[in-house]
Image (cartoon, rainbow, N blue to C red; front, side, top):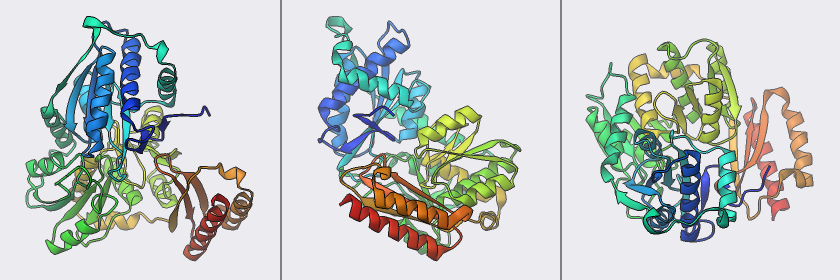
Amino acid sequence: MTKRNYFGTDGIRGKANIYPMTGEVAMKLGRVVTYYFQKLNNSIKKPVIILGKDTRRSCYMLEQAFAAGVCSQGGSVILTGPLPTPGVSFVTKSMRADAGVMISASHNPYYDNGIKIFNGNGEKLSDKIELELERLMNHPELVEVKINEELGNAKRLDEVFGRYIVQAKSAFSSDFDLSGMRVVVDCANGAAYKVAPMVLRELGADVITIGVEPNGININDGVGALYPQRAQKLVLKYRADLGICLDGDSDRLVIVLKNGEILDGDVLIGIFTKLLFEKGEIKKNDTIVGTIMSNLGLENYVKSLGLKFIRTKVGDRYISEDMKKTNSILGGEPSGHVIFKNHSLTGDGIISALKFIEATKFFKNIDKVIDQISLCPQVLLNLNVKKKIPFEELSLFSKKLKSFEKELGTTGRILVRYSGTENLARVMVEGEDEKLINDIADALIDILKKELS
């Protein structure tokens, strides 16, 4: 695979103001994105670029730098202010823009940031296009310089979030409403701090909020999808019907049930599969797209309904690509990214939350559906690493990995990978014997510590 200097699993990501997450790189990227999409669309008009962000303090720096790059290349940039990633995707397509850009590091701490790019259809870019953008960034002399009246402009349209609110609400079945429901929603002090409570209230819910007071440095700080415990306590305290936990850019969801139980992400996808199947939106032999991290139990459940299940690489853009190839309308991963293709082209935490509420109303007894989805025991351990050395180059680790895979046989599996967005090595072990998989995971992590130290 061609070595990448900028792009990872989900756009460009890193520590804010440290290469590659600097104003200089953002300006350079703004310039080449504008150039690329103008050439792609053979446009003589100014390319229109939608530019959204979450609530990190560094977003001010990167937003202005990227916008300067767009203007320097003759583009027209529309600044949306804080808006969920799926909102940027939707608005890009809705406003017939040439491209959309989201400045966010998703679930990462405030000191990180990232840049995600969408094409004019609101889809994340393919590896091929990202590599072409990298080529242009590495060779700025290939991008013609604009001067005089050719230079672009920028304007702020904060009200565009209203378009996204209407779109999100339309995903909820008109057969139901949220009247009489008490819902706890945790917005992670992130991009959805305004829109998520508005969507729920406009549909009739009594809403209790957490994480709706962003200050630039408290995004994902003990709140949101990575920390559902606060929502869990409030669900029990206020006897709420549901807890909804979003991450910093609102592209993922964690559900807290009314009894305080935190719902597994794969069970959530199983519920959505059953809902769409029972409503006739998914038919026999249709495909559900998961990832290499998806639980074997989910795969078995999907197949028990007469459906196909395929796995792709981690990341909702890869899920989206395979959904397109297989004409699937549902895909997701256990972390809470779920794509409902009929409503969004990227993971959308708010739409996923509405669809879960719809499922509770459609099935009446959601616990019965949950009980039908039996997951295999699974353990996932992370290890902070300084350098991502290919696993096959770690002799002792490779040897032990093969031995453990043989021991598990066909009743389990082991997956080792480096995170595409953080300096982490991830070890996932799955199987019928819970003690065995825990022992294997611990042993593999210990070996990695020694070989990577």
